[in-house]
Length: 447
Image (cartoon, rainbow, N blue to C red; front, side, top):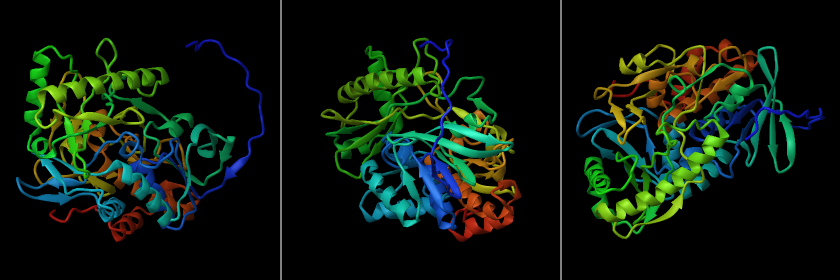
């Protein structure tokens, strides 16, 4: 694609579509929670999503398991580290028979759910909290006045329009709003991010036999496939048995460039290449599971995510940076607004996934400043594009902590309206008290 030649675009008048108190861009777990929290706190809230449903990775990528909700206390017990809107979501899924109890794979814990029913549940959840939703709408540009975002320009089937908010929460995953507003960011570690994955669902699975397999046993089966000549780029798997019998969600592909390096999924050309390579790998793994993994002999791909699953792109610089050393040390800062006990889960080079687990019963806190964007006065981030080092983001980026971060961002955004929409002027103690009152967990019970 030619990126050297330019052409002049004439200036034009753009209609103002909305003037909400709080604009949330991106409706993944962080954005959905941010919008619900802001509206719950009394702010007029608009949630903008570029796809046709809410949920982001949870619905569009068909992830299949909610991660990061629990801490491992010992060989038998789990403890919650995410409550509030995350717990409300689980309760809503349970009412429509779309969620299963937590499933352990050693010290890895996931909560299987039905991604199709989740789409409807999230519609109902957003409506119940009074969130206005604009789907099939992409944020494409930002106008700033000094240190403030004055408008976010969007495009959809109706053309181009402007949204004029008092405060913005960027939950786009890729930090699109922050980057277009001129915020500083890092791209992975020295430009190399974690690998993404094309997620898919299989039908025809003997769930009794498949469910009896450990991750280590599945990996051994896939290593045998490699030994027999199948070019599998990854043998460390995530298999989530669906609430619907005979269905399994697989998180196993590892799209990479021809030289083996990860794609930069913030680059549109590489993103397209990753989509195509991911789909190619889906059918390779379908064959591998049918031939080598017990319980999958009659399995067949029934769905591939609408987009590749992205683990890491831009890490937007905030007033605070969550560091890898803080995660490893299980630091619990006084200004925390969420907590996590998920391991450092790094999808780097090679066929394996690098897991570094926190000690049993341990957790760490995420400071408020990791959501407050450096250099801008009315912009927050929430989700995997938070202010964090590459290694720390490998722990905090999963669904449970992202919902907690979103709830904190949305609540803080609404509370900051009294201070002119400036999160730095917020009474942090009051924010923490409000979050606790709404059921968010800042002090896990067993601690």
